[in-house]
Picture 1 (tube, rainbow, N blue to C red):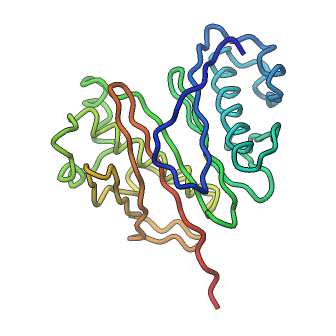
Picture 2: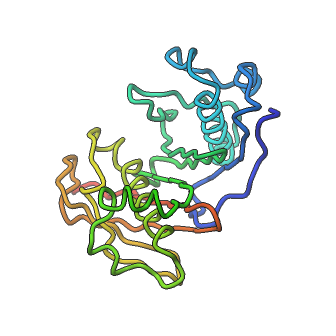
Picture 3: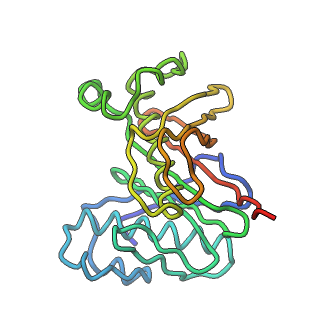
Length: 236
């Protein structure tokens, strides 16, 4: 496909999670690119603008490649649910992200992992941060800002971590929740890790004060975050 090129993705995934990433140019996207890569566009996207189609195709192509890396079989389709969420093949789970010409996906077996969430965000400008800061960040979270991250990068990290948490948990709880329903409670700048706590009961066994571990990677322009929920043992 002429509108994308493959990329290495941040190296913080466990061995049982396979990842794929690419960069793409929405301006170069043509409808034939989807069919050329075996991606079926949902009916409701047939009249979408080229940018939206490019994002969908890039994300699904990453998902197909991640699944191929996991299973050794090419061509697995990842459909779209009612809210546009990925619908993974039986026995598999995963997560997809895309932002401004970048897309990535992870896939794993549901016998190993209960939930996966990845997110990538372009680092906010000062103006954007001042506009959204109070909506996405809680005052107590700023205690954990590392010295090597400026406020815009840290605000983007908080935003991305909460997006990864949503992507990890939504397929399990099947309900919406928001930025105010979680908060960062620890961050280790050396190991690029963080802990995030639920502030609301979500059902399906996920309760207020439940904590989840994640990892982040920051470059000059983007923040990448990952949260994985290891398969929990069934009650005896």
